[in-house]
Image (cartoon, rainbow, N blue to C red; front, side, top):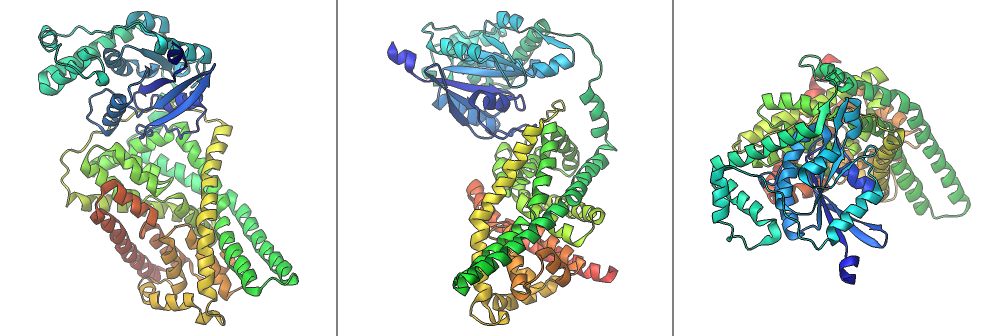
Amino acid sequence: MIEQVNRPVSVAIVGNPNVGKSVLFNAITGASQTIGNWCGKTTDVCTLAVHYENRELHFTDLPGIYGFGGHSPEEILVNDFLRDEPPDVVMVVLDVMNLERGLYLLLETLERYSKVMVVLNKVDVAREKDIAVYHDRLEAELQVPVLPEIIKGRLNPRELFATLIDMADSLTVLRTHSIRYAEAIERQLIERKDSVVDSRFGSARWVLLKQLDASDDALQTEIISTRYKLAEDVAARVMARRSSGETLSDRIDRWVLHPVLGGPLMLLTFGLVFYLTFTISRPASEWLSENFDLFGIWLDAVMSERGVPSLLAGMLVDGVIKGVGAAVGFLPQMALFFLFYTLIQDSGYMVRVVFLADRVMSALGMNGKTFLPLVLGCSCNVNGVLASRILSSPYDRTVAILISSYAPCPARLGVMVYLVSAFFASTAATFVMLALLGISLGLMVVVAYIVSLFISRSGEGSFIMELPSYQSPTLFGLVKSASMLTMSFIRRIRNVIIAASILMWILSTFPLGAFEDSYIVAIGKVLEPVGQIIGLSWQLIVALLFGIAAKESVLSSLGIIYHAAQDSGNLAEILTHNISPLTAFTFLLVYMIYTPCVTTLITMYHETRDWRIVLYGAAGSFILALVLGGIAFQVGRLIF
């Protein structure tokens, strides 16, 4: 009995995509897992322990599903987990704004498991839309504990934990919920009732239903239709709409999702983001760069007074300080951009961007869901490659893996924003950034078309889009998310850029003597013919070479190379004196397109186990970068 009382309680949280499971999971466990407003954000299993009154509860956040069909990667993952780690209690999260769809999953869960509780989510949204959901009626209807939210993502903790522990410790074998199906189905269930021996999958009746579901399309249709009809009946009895007026989200979406105006409004939104980023962050960036230079001068003087060896002082000042200072120079732009990006994402607008992109991608023969890895690829190309797991079709997955490397990650965006800000005024800089991102999107379409020539499109997955209501993100949440993204970049400075800066300093210093005789100049002269094709100097080509290891090291490499030949002035001033705006644009175009970083290439192999795809991704982007860079430079020379 002591073992029964003290053992941990395992709770599996299931629900439809975008139902708010991660919000609830974070609130219960205190986790800081990333939360998104689009389907497929939680693609892996996450389990965390919570202690309550000397009892340990293990909560597992599972990917969003619509049923236990086992067709999509999410359904397969959930079924595998529930089979291998049978939970004590299954917590089903229902979105009251989409109650019928959620009730379908709940009804199947009740058929599969005996210990199930329900959480009603987004009650506050329903209240705003004058929709009443009577949780006590739902509890009585299905004979299952139902807990409504108190506020967004918050439940009564004492009631929640007490309910879970009581259900887990109950020695009474509860009967699973039974739906009455057509006579033909019920007859076959009776005939096969003794054939189920493995209880890990769930109740015997549910296992038999899955067997019938898989064996006959007509029976499958009948089973699904019966569940949906019951879900519709239950929803009608437990909820009531007091008014049918248009909501604020509906009014906004009339403009945002307009077939003609939606696209221009999206461009205007992101254009405004870039304009504000350039305008507001420019003074802070200049101040930070200047003070880093002054700190380097001060440190050099201090070490000289104290007799520090000149080589060590040179490595610290000309290597670490100037290399890291060049990268830190665009921290203000990145921090501000991340703040605006988080606002767009958390408000619910980002899912509208995906919806608008689906129209274009569908017209081009691509699944709109492919756009989701691209969105995640903007946080890191590695994340974009990993997010391809949400796609069920091999064709869709291959397309997503190859084109996600063209999504500008924070490192590339940071370098691009810094250089664009240095060479162009705010208004012109905004149009340059939008042009670069437009070229990036166009290349994704081209690459997807090329993939379609070699891989059959058969088996492409469908795209089910959820449009949640708009939300008002809190200032704390926005600052926290933007700070986490910025700190992630700072950690990369510590881990990657310092090492790259020291290596670049060594190459630009040795053999001792004139800079023109250093190893870095020798390497640059070898690569110079490649640069001449696209109008780039050897310094820019060498910086691109170092960027293959880590994209953010490009700016630190430029800082060391140009500072080695010209000691005074901050990097932005030095670059504008040595590089024309046309060359800068060509460099940015090549930088945005060319070979993904090593980490992304390794991840591509781990996800595909096919070196051919990795080779296509690396070589294809390199060739595209050379071709487009050459065209941009030659056309630019004719115009300017």
